[in-house]
Length: 399
Image (cartoon, rainbow, N blue to C red):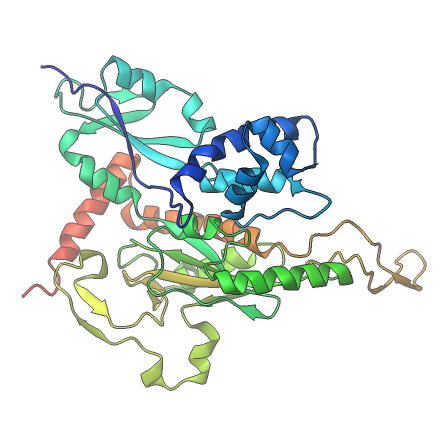
């Protein structure tokens, strides 16, 4: 039997370039190539005329193109090379990994699956599919070849994600869009602070600049969201198996984190029961949630130490960095006398980066809970157990 030809890479996402003209997008690789060369030679700033010459375009056109990215340079100084590399890379989708499925595992498909250069370019081969029964089940580059008919299922499974975004920094709240973007991380990565509120972002940047001049630091809050979890992970039986407790412990282990909320968190203590608890209604076909729907998600996807099938929503609070450029009073342990802390190099805030760490810690705990729930000595066995569980859940409350 012949195999599908040619092999294709199926991308699960598309980068957004809202508001940027196609002509500008087509010139961004030229600017990026020129900037990368400058960065490799240690150049920190570049004027629009110098960059335009290196890219082979007019300086006026270059300035207009870069204005679409929100980058206007500094009069008398020029553009920050490293930051401009980041801005352009972000718009071209080069700052995130892209998970792909290879369709057709013939000679070309084998070559693509085994090509190590994809990873360095941000492409992660997540699955292989083919229509040839003689190929299905083979292992290529560490991945099993799946039937072509499972392509839609494979792609939909890959869309289950954990994402994070900044919701507060230094006294400034960011509004949270409802609904959240399908790909939270892609939307958050479009912001240098990983926030989904552009107006708040501008105010936060102004606040950061002011605090930096004072030699001070800022804390903030990130929200972690996981969609696609099935009902029933965790336990209501033992204190040490309750998923909310395990998640809180993992997130509190991150340096400088001082608080964790699940759902509306501390706000629940200020409301009446009718304004806290989530009402439910029948929802046939919502297998992950046990064929019910919660009209709200104030519980944040966890009730009684177990997942409900609704999105898991966690908020993680980080204190300001303790190393200030304006030293605080302390005690010299050698002499016992009063002293001033040492002034060291210090960032103003690390909250946006903490959100990414919080995603990873959340993923560790959820993976452990899934293995405890579904067991198995291999991923394939765990998957079978999971599918069997969902089949059982699908029968609940059927009418």
